[in-house]
Length: 368
Image (cartoon, rainbow, N blue to C red):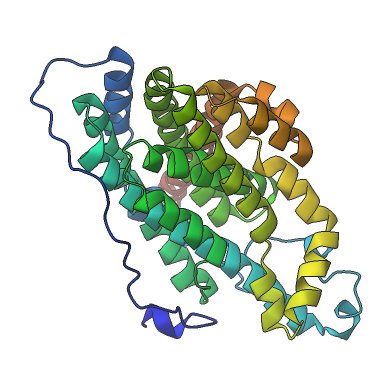
């Protein structure tokens, strides 16, 4: 089945073309490079995995409740529209929200793949090119997995959100080699990690939990890579250059906070856009999500050295300034541990099943 048959609304363009900017850079220096980045590159090679094998795709998913979403977190809950919904309608609403969320994840991962490839092309240092090559493969795997989940388990996709597409386009059009790092590794990936983590930690459905846990394990390396590369580079910037990048961060954060609300879902249920925006703004769940949205972004921005007065003031206005003190290394270590714990549980269960099968065979043999 063609993906286009599954879209709720046909994408504006079959192929979105973003004009390339900037230079491809080759390095003729083949020395060992920076120890920290090469260690991350080695880890990137060691941690490659096959999404067709590591994830248990045989797990059944109810397309009308893919994530075990409580009614209370749905924007329409408690409104005049909610009383008109049948149980079937409510299931359809959960399906649409799951499709919208995972579609944005899918589009974002394709964007991350393109940005990682752009970093391979444009970054001047060979050790960074090496690591970015492993990340490009990671992002391809993530796009494959989210696409498969939507096709096989949900059966519905949404086009890319206009604001996410705008931020991705701004990131790719910029000719400066560090901007794919800043736009994708820090902002878009930071947003995705917050959303992944919220669903991973609240869903009671094993398949989406597996998918998100394993993807987040990879993303922990990607964020570490962006922090290393940008921290080193941003120490060398002039005040004017640093100010330009802080403005980009502020605009990107406002865009993600104010525009990524799933209004498209409500419109598909007959709610006029203006009312859909108002209902979204009144949602307690959305306010909580916005707070968590910045849990990965603010400490990373501070860590790489973008912490000017105007940026700090913007985060104060958003109510997320205190998140600058979050321990990003601890969050990333926890992401890795969750994935490893899932693997241990799954392998232990498989061992028990095999042992039970052997025991059953022995019992049958003794009874024969």
